[in-house]
Image (cartoon, rainbow, N blue to C red; front, top):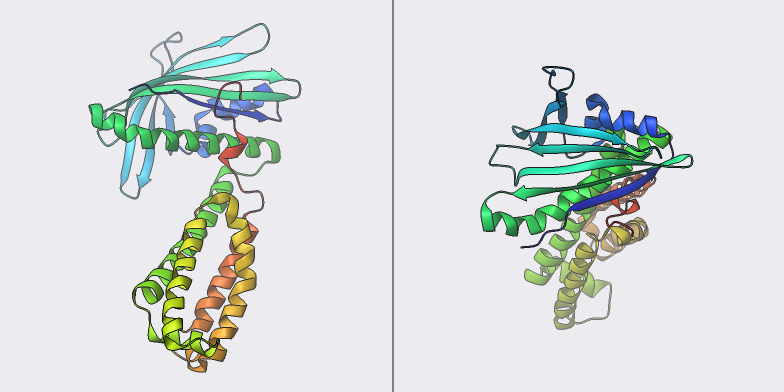
Length: 302
């Protein structure tokens, strides 16, 4: 099964010396690179020995992958282009990556630096591992590109990687929350259960008969499920957040008009919709200066 190496390229408004420092010093590298939680250089046996290191990647609390790496050397051309080669791997069976090789390259470009990487690896578990790699490889490539953008923002505007990642994951957790709520509200009380309260409120807000309202509530549920799915599309999320900020007050008011008792019931529509309205505002604010993988080139020469 033919596989393509992972390639990521970005441009950083900085000197090559500073980009080199932020990528070659372990205490700085581990801060911006999403693929690693910690990187520790091992002591060299002699001055000319290759630099080796160990790394860990925390997957979740109590579960992490540890691996090894070895710098295969640095080459610098007369033009100022620097290349750093690397050999890496892990013996832990939990990792889909067995062993790999790659390089980082630093290309001066006026007052900027073209920073790029290309690497490849062998997947473990034979044929099954190769099939799983069809899903894993795009994810690790995306993580590399996102990390490069976080690095660029850190160097260019001084925003710490931890702050960037906190904003990034907070934003997408909120978007996944909205997706789940729209999917659940469309599927369970409407499409599946045809809840009497849903039908009753629709009848009070429209001239529909019970039979018509019962059919309409299913279609409304399907529409809500479509919105939930669309919420997983990053390009459309800001537009949906703006729509929610306008929509939730209207939905709350219409629910109270149709059934005033819903405003005083436990876990009522007022507290629910106001909470979603505020969460929508917070999520929209988080979209400002959000790190993204899309600013990096993923193909050589693209």
